[in-house]
Length: 622
Image 1 (cartoon, rainbow, N blue to C red):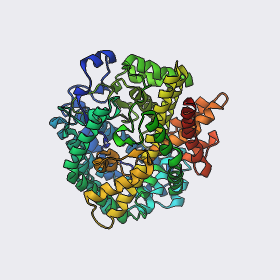
Image 2 (cartoon, rainbow, N blue to C red; image 1 turned 90 degrees about the horizontal axis):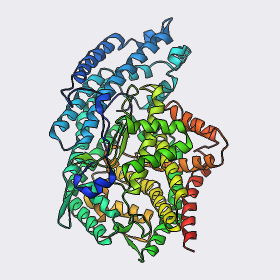
Image 3 (tube, helix red, strand yellow; image 1 turned 180 degrees about the vertical axis):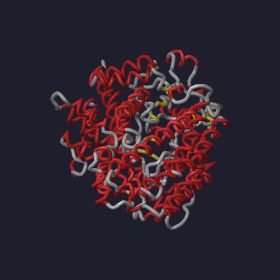
Image 4 (cartoon, rainbow, N blue to C red; image 1 turned 45 degrees about the horizontal axis):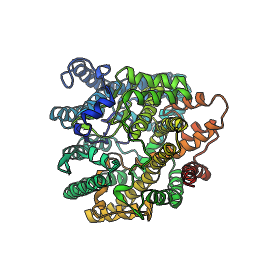
């Protein structure tokens, strides 16, 4: 769906097994918080929540009434004597309905994420998806009709402060005008999103059900992937071989899902008139193709100085000529092995945030005290981590699978960065709070950087400093090099899909070609790795999302360099940038910091920060 209407958020995560955390480890972790969803809907959990049923009924009747009052009448309102004020009234009604529908859909998606294997929650999630799609289809005319207004008429109406308040949203809407179809086609695309979205559910629920046998134990995806971080090389190899075996057994299904969704996107792109396979993502991100192309080119040119160089160093540290793909993220001997308890993790992150800005720490603290975080690993729970913004009338919710590793602390810092950003942006309202992905990753990566720097300053020994630096470099490589490689993989897949279906073998060939280029000669991609493309969720749920991570990481590297050399006032300017939500273009947001993503040197500065950390690691070896 092209336009800003509420839809069910896609959840790019899978189930994690409760078996991954031993009782001994659980004791060390301490009490882990779980969500309190009563802030969205109280009473019985799920479809029996009385307030939710009431809101579904009232939103359906409100949407029908809105359509009856305004469909086909916006031009008349705009030309009237009170054109600006009249249109502003319609936008406020539209906004209020978006908030209500968003509350319903957030509740359903969070319940589903908490246990994707529960049939009742699966059904509830699907039923809400259908109902929200039906209700929001009555609102679809509104952005379409606004875009048919003459530019001069709309500009005149926006002179009224009431409508002028919504200028950022209206201007973003106008950017989509060239790709707008006639109303009936837009309605068809909108209603068919329910069935095309079923492929996403098939992917999620298949991944939930997969089990990987490692040393006689059957594990779900997350604990198996977690074994690739184990200090024992034999365990890492067994986990990688189990992953390869199960992926290969299921590769035909994942190939069908990939081909179907890539074709579905190609049909939509062709009808709308998008020339390049990623143009629709660039439009949604409010970023120019030339800026993304410059980022991609800069990262690819830096592969030898970053990933190739680092992995050659790591192979030497581990006493190997080359690293098998299952050793790529192996911990160094210097890495601390202790389990980091939840209280310590909370204190570490909040202290780092507070050192930057007490206000930022105060906002982050509410996530811990008010039931906004779900941290334990549970059977059926969504894999990985996310911060769900929900709606401005509520607050974000963070999902983690916390197991006490140093990387888990950094993940907590990352998601809290998102959460703080979402809280600050809420004042912009449902239509203008959402931030393009490229800037949405800025706050999360900045939060990670604050935490990393705090930990690095506290490192008591050279060995621990090396472990922290190496972990940060690996995270940056995974965020920048890996994600740009993923983006290039997607580009090739979607481009070739325009000429016909891709076989599993061809998908594997493209995957290996891209991985060889990005990881370099020090990584040995063993047999079975050719099927590892199939578990990357963003390929399914959010095509071309991945470059936003690299964009955010490089942007934050440049931003942090400004912070280190800045006088007083940086924190206030930074929080103001986050509070702007989706009301400003990236060029406008970065201007107060003297940064411009359109400058070819901008990306080089960000990549130079990663290179400097590798230099520091190399110096520690002397």
